[in-house]
Image (cartoon, rainbow, N blue to C red; front, side, top):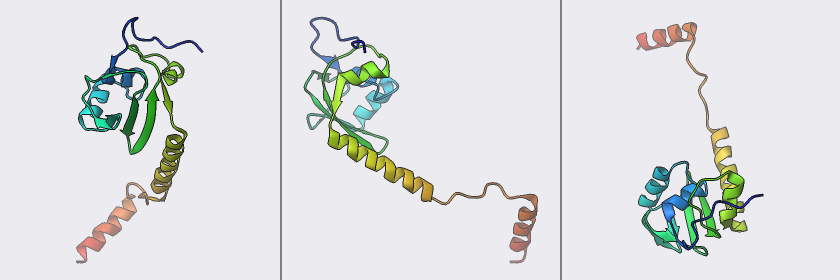
Length: 136
């Protein structure tokens, strides 16, 4: 596995929105910026702006699509690289991984138990509905 494209030599800080994008938590920097503005990302327990500079060792709490990620920044990157390389930029707690998997299973079970309609009514069913409505 190759090393991720790290920040320039001498740079020990990177903008948070850029790092979140490079680490592949968000598809675009704009989505990362919006999540930060809405308070869905905290750094060391503090709500921060997108321009916040992060450094290795910072602890992040991300809330994305009803799921929480507790990660620690290991390395900085300024370019978006393949997912395998992006995973080298952070370490996620085991408890966070297990809690997220449980939440995903719960959401999947809720979706499966939600009653889905039969789709569009047939011509015969529409006639029956029309007769039923006309009778009242």
